[in-house]
Length: 429
Image (cartoon, rainbow, N blue to C red; front, side, top):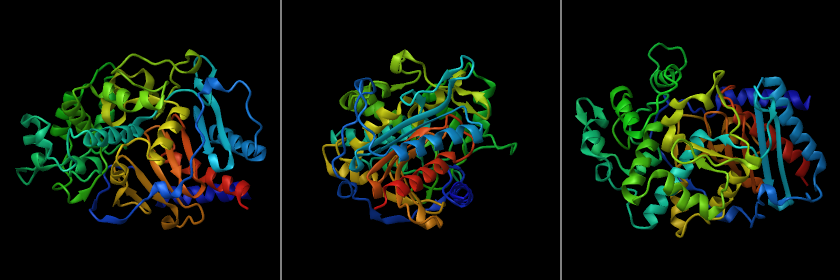
């Protein structure tokens, strides 16, 4: 009965709750709330390197561990997923779970490992936002600078044409970060034949050997992604915004985007198994293993050179452990020198989806507003292959992982909801 209840709850949520459908737009209505994350958390335990645990500590919640592994196994077995990785880190309980199920490489029959690398896709947006804010701290740019200061006029003059007039030069860095630029989404927004796969994704699948760079992507966006409205008037999630932010990072930092990620985030945090696909040498996973296979509508994404387009909107590979370091560093305010930078990331803008708002490279889900009471909220980001990295303030916990498939749609929310109810069932006093 408990399992059935979980499934019903998840189905109801997926029908009514937050969607990453990039065609959704809503007039801007800034939320009055700004999450004071530092007031919600206590000091978490440091996350050890995966290779630094020769003797695992005694499990304080063995029944919870069994239940969480059961969830992972069930999601693979009952949803036909290639593999699942799940990490739940709860320092207040002195508890951390890392589990996996399924195959990292189906042809080789290689089992997934909990510390295996996976494509994080749009979770990259959080790194892009953090990098921008770190450059703001260094005085390299301002959030309210217009796009025209950093992007050549040959692009900005054609970038946002509304009723025959160009608004591209008026778009600000802030509006790119919170998806209020008015720009259409090149990667998911255009589907002329109505088959459920965007025109750009069809191009990616049809031309797997194409190596995209940011200029090629921007040209395609200018020609094909219809604007949503004038800058600042409408929310519309879109990869176009974060491709432009990547270009701004390069224009202001004097580094490539890959160098900026590595110097400003990966190296200071010790993210030793994270790298930027197509832009820097491959960083091997634990025990030298390759990135786990991810599937888009059944097509092996890893084999497509054409997914090089993802760049600043989705180009990173990481692990659950590395993402956990990054997420806790954000929660504790350790990513920035100025607390105002973290506050900027949680200046929420409402979206068309119930209980959902967007800050700068971060989503906020308030489940009670979607008729799912009792579990609170999550702050973080998901990715194309149902990857996820979210903070759960009510438990001072992180939820991180992947389903390595874009199907089922919004599946990462389903597994997170099930995990949160399960955790509460074993930790409630």
